[in-house]
Image (cartoon, rainbow, N blue to C red):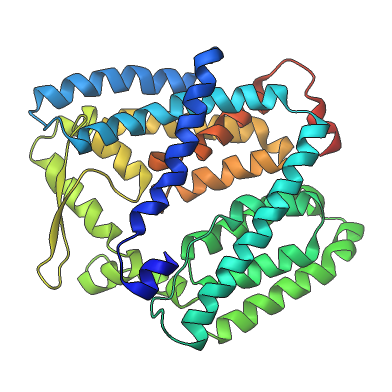
Length: 365
């Protein structure tokens, strides 16, 4: 992304290499290991098969976008299975190894952000304010190690990065983790974490004064009757919603069964006359409604809620936090569609809340 910003050379496709490698590794893993199916996996298998036939019935082109919809329905199946295998095999020794890896990832992330900050805030060679990272994935493991300096730096750097989604995710990380210590409220708990809470409040206040929340404020100014307001507040995501509404309204049965694999709709930006044919939406629930229909989407999120409720007692567990944050993030990002890591977290959460075996990993978390 930095190379793309600085040189103008289109190397943005490189960002897709890592997700593809994730999928390849997990697929190869399942060549020698049994595929574990959970209710969400079965939901995707059944609906995916139906959507293949619906795509053909509706006359959707059998092209790249059709294959992308197949991809969207496949990664939950193998991702959940891998996550369940992973959780079942995890032990204290391997977890210690993981922590070292996550700590190295934290250093690398900060280095990349420092490079971005230099070219954005100091030289001005990168004009766009907004650089996404996965720091919200690292943060629960930093919290688990009580690395308060790293946690503080994570918050500051994310605020400076200007990404609304990551900012909301890290605050949810903090809320879920510390709720296990502070609620029910105890004086001892408050005193223990008071210095950190004061520092966090100071960062928020200073950040607000320096404009760190400008993009969040633009989201809060959303006005569905003002096209410019919706465009700025949602980064064009509201126009995706409108495009899907218009598409499904022409054939109302699609609200129930979806557009099928290969379905697409017209995305129009109200200013400049720009339009594009799209096959997904950044609001994941809306994307699922477009592809699979309302019943599928409702059942899927009810399943997520069930896992959340059953697993709330495990809210200090970094993997459960990641499950919660990932599902939360799906309401303003397409993470469930493209990132198999999220489905690995879902598989781990399934194991955490449903396994009848003694999960010793919980003991030292």
